[in-house]
Length: 174
Image 1: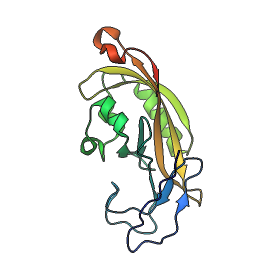
Image 2: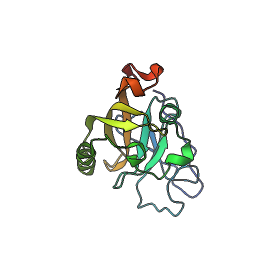
Image 3: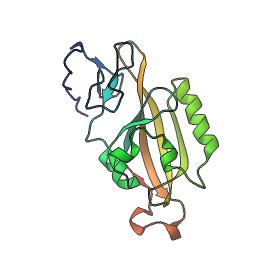
Image 4: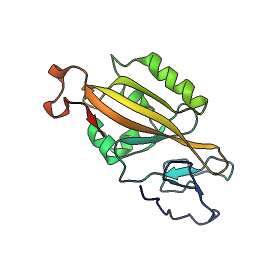
């Protein structure tokens, strides 16, 4: 995975830190990121994701873990446009059969800075259920502070084949 060489906004230090093991480059928030414009040097750094990535989302480092960015593949699969997910939590893809206890467990793991994997029933924007096997991973700056979380889809499969499009009925490594 190539490391992105970000453009550092005027007024921010030009020194960049690499997020441990992520293949990403961290930078201070700027107007092209999805964080508040009123940022300071005390706020967490934002890691700019590699746009060639597969099904991934990047969230804030603290509860409620709002979505900052999602790959085009994730957006396309789930049926959303970027503006529909920015600032939302993953409740946007939860529904009737989503295992909320697992979601709470993931939040707990994230609050402790742990990497965790699980499978949950999630839903596309159109309400189609799917089995979603994914991993959450903290991305850290050079100081070891968590700057955000990467949520990476490991595989997807049909929840109920009778209600799921044929093209999506098999579990696929992404």
